[in-house]
Amino acid sequence: MNAPESVTDKLDLTKHHGAGNDFLVLVDPDGRWPVDAELARALCDRRFGVGADGVIRVLDGGDRADLAMELRNADGSEAEMSGNGMRCLAQAAVGSGLVRPPAFTVWTPAGVRTVDYRPGEQAGAAEASVDMGKPALGPDQPPEPAGQKARLVDMGNPHLVVLVADPGDVAVAELGERLQLRHAGGLNVEFIAVGRQRDAITLRVWERGVGETQACGTGSAAAAAAARSWGLVGDSVDVHNPGGTLHVDLGNDGARLSGPVRKVADLVVGVAELLGGARP
Image 1 (cartoon, rainbow, N blue to C red):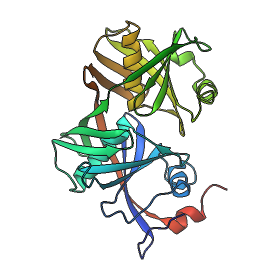
Image 2: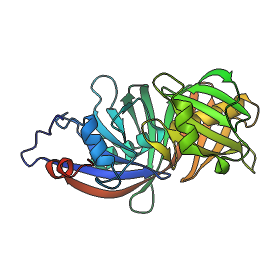
Image 3: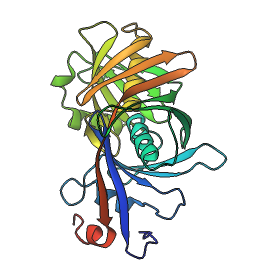
């Protein structure tokens, strides 16, 4: 791996979550601390490491935006975009003084995104909304196992949204992995059902490179877009993830994701110790 340039070989990280979708954030405006696949896997390991769904590196945005985001999934693979991760990045960047609320821009491999950020009244709590870009609806797919409808949606990263009777009855880990392997490069799979309230859906998600997670921001936006295309919801949708509710507004210019973000901890991680005790 590319070792940090620190004399002490230690990383200063913060941990955050958006509706239970948790990330380790490394604020690195000078670009001194590269995070490769090996380091990301070791950090995200919930038994041998710190534990998270992904690692976010916050860089200076240069002439592209105020900030730039690099994201690695728990398996070390690179990801294009994360709505929950973007809100975690925002909290870390504001907390470190890199940017000031209420609004700033972030470059991602999926494009430049705008974040609106509002600190909460409780310590460590905030609310943030993220411009998610315009959902690109693909064609309906043949009904998948246990599904009534299925549709591909591109949110800058790929999704397959599957309408089911009850997401709680779906073997997400087994079926999600099987479905994503049918697509070159893999994708994220959302299993959704219409909620009891109007313009609401329930969701469980299998994320490429991670597995089942408590919430998914891009997945919530993709699910809302697919559900609207099927005439199940309107333009303003509450998406009930296992870890909490995210709100998606679907406008002519694209989708906007809103929800809570919480800081969990400040962490100092010794890289040598971490990698020395990594999973065999």
